[in-house]
Image (spheres, one colour):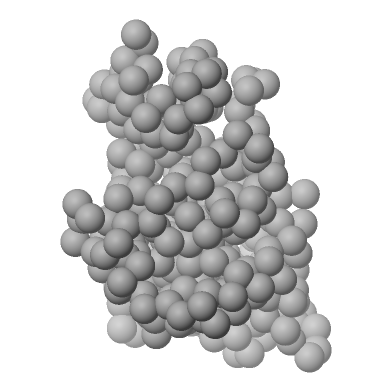
Length: 280
């Protein structure tokens, strides 16, 4: 088979465009207690495209503002710095890859599922009284390794997609058979290269199986959010299989039937508008 090795994947990752300086600064601020918000706001405002999309997200029903937010400074004042940091990071992530020439990899379905997982993970984090902003970003990133493989190893990844359809198996199983590596491993390497916090790197690395990881709450909400997003079929991908939810993750969340129904409803309610802003 056309197996690839980790060293080659790392080289391909390092050939990818780096995140912008302002996004890198925002990521580094996640571990800082004191941040110069005014300085960062001014830097963000100089990037007109980033500012425009961020303000569209800030004014969406996702936040339910009663009046229109017209500047980054106002967004920070109203929504808080952490929420604006999440919006800007989200915009940067979704704009970081060009489309593959392969006709088999469905970019629209990929981003729809990633956004659905992000929205659901945020709702689960709220239920668990954990960081909603971190959950949203980690949910958005969870499958990012697929984009590296689909855009940097186009022919091999077409074989992966064909094998998945032939076997009716999980995509990660087809990846390991064809490439000897899977998207979770590649996603871990990319989030490390992009300098996302270690907790997010681990959530990406272990989003398919929390039983073999130190199941911190961020990994748990991304794992369960991924499964719920597939179950709701928000990506509109007929071939996608709903992954099993690890028992330890489900037990840790302590979801009731009422909690679950509310999370499903809120995920579906917020999902479409965010997709229209980010990927249409």
